[in-house]
Length: 405
Image (cartoon, rainbow, N blue to C red):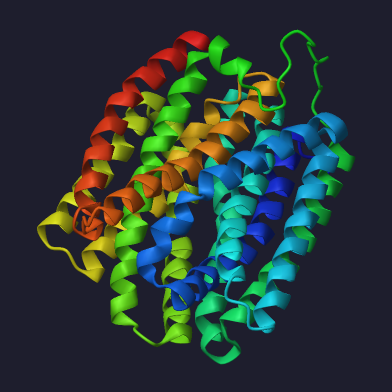
């Protein structure tokens, strides 16, 4: 390992940290969703998701202040161990029979995973050259994705016997090795150079960078649209599963574990083989254009023949490409940027933006549901329109990325 160039060491060690984190996320992802639906019903998922932007905004704002005070290494350590502690507290409340903790757990799950994963990528993007990033970003997502594959498979095997609550405990424990390994990586290989703060233009969240760099603006817009697609596909899929597995909480948890485990295993081909090849031989613009086109075709099929299979396939493909090719291609755009763009603006885009795309759409869905609109009938149509908007934004994103970089 010591003989490898520093940038490769960073990529390998942070990918391994992400592997532990994503393994734990698979335990909490399926279990927290099923526990919430069991307590309050699938029809109330948009309601809890509607609160997500406020929770995530507060989380990103707190992260920015911790980053200013502690720097990247200690911020990652604090947010990692703090996340594990919060999840463990939720587990204890579940054991006491609390139902009110289920929406809290759902929101913690949505926040902590993106907050930690984006910090790993901030360090990777600060350590790699654009050329190296095109070679290793796919394999980095692949190594990290092994954790998701292992975690999802273990949920599928154990959830029926051990129960959904035990999955939450395992998620809390998995954060510990990720925190220790990422902290070791920073201590061994060093922190990125931190610029002197400008008191006249300071912002813990890096808002001023959006005025200076249009690439960030279009990145945020693309992320918002992509996550609108994710939200409506997720809601449609969860609604169909609730009907299929009525009054069978642990069986549904096991099914979702198998679904995510299969997804994370299948996507390894995209991460280790397809993404590196595309990034090496195909332009970033073409790759970014392909993403919404693929999803438009899958959603079109689900519109034509709606079922658990067709909707699950559209959701499966979205997550598969989101975890691999789209992620790898998107991260390349951050590499030439500065510290504040990679550590502050990136959190706004890839934490706040990701969750606001889901949560903001849920606000509208809840409002329309209150007016008597059966929104589940329109989820797929909304997703199809969002892919068209996403496609239009891609051309502006890639044009400005070429100009700004």
